[in-house]
Image 1 (cartoon, rainbow, N blue to C red):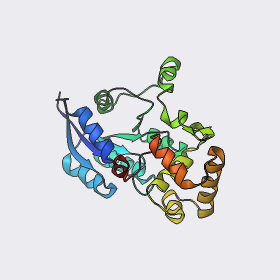
Image 2: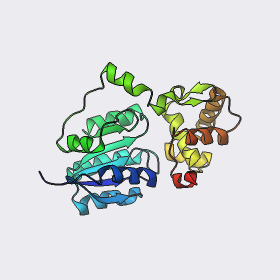
Image 3: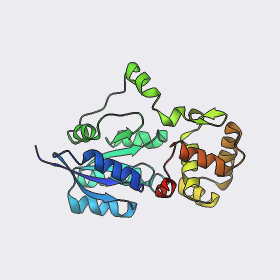
Length: 226
């Protein structure tokens, strides 16, 4: 079997280092490029002639990474794995499925990364987890079971999580509205609603708890390791 060439695209150095470490000992898989800038991904996929692209669903500028991944797959025939720590918007998930890309929820699917790469490379489709498997994974599902003040993260919508993530990156309400294609008043409403659910007094406390409890990983996540 030929060596599977992989490109990893994620703004978080923590995630890219983790993936590289997981794949370092696999002789059948080679990481040919690690990218932190969305603008470099398309060109790299063409230049490196890679087989599989790992790309974070929430790279900078909102969900544009998912659309870009679809373009890359159709233009280069590269296999694509969209990765995230939590579920994504239904419209985006539908697009991923339509384009025959694979969505990997890192908290839900805890299999070996190399196994996932090989299945995607061989274009194997993924079935839903069985009820028994879901129960075993439930306690590890950070996206749904993280306690946030007076509520659990299961009470947050996908958009709520995306807003928290953007706040953690230091974005203003105007920046968040632009990145997520929302109105500023909608951003304010979502934050106010989350504060009401959690009982937290301000957005700083909301973000701090989300980061500490690993509900989100900020773009400048290295700063949170100090």
